[in-house]
Image (cartoon, rainbow, N blue to C red; front, side, top):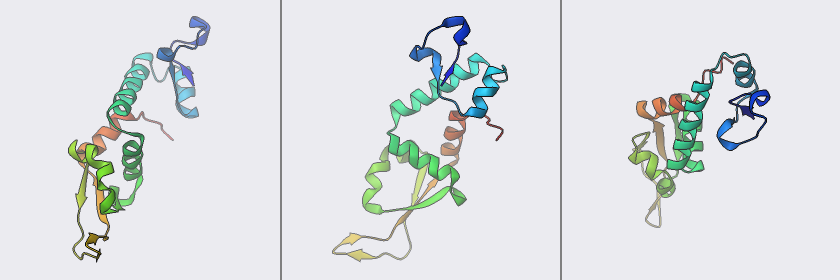
Amino acid sequence: MHHIVPWATCQAHEYENLIALCPNCHRRADRGEIDRKALRIYKFNLRTAHDKFSQLEMDVMAVLGQAPGNAIQWPPFNRILLLRIIDAGYIEVIEPQGVIEISGMRMSPDVVRLTRKGIEFLMSLSTDHGD
């Protein structure tokens, strides 16, 4: 945890003044390489994203951001779990060519892929780690 206003100045652990950073960014913030305004904007973006989307949706987008081609297979019967990020235009669903059905239920996995808008959204949430 990092104090946006340094501990030596504020002597308090208030939510509005705390942000979780990786060790590299924590050192950079302590050295003044990441300024307080940038930290506050980053915290605001994270809070806004987590207020809008579930942890599952955020995790799926993070995984897509790291996956080859920004795409993974996804069971079609679980598509409902992704509806908000589909509706937001952050991911797209590509249905398979060959379909396997069992008792009338399609079992062939879809491919879900991060869109350009989704990539931009993820980039807006991150800071330049340089690592």
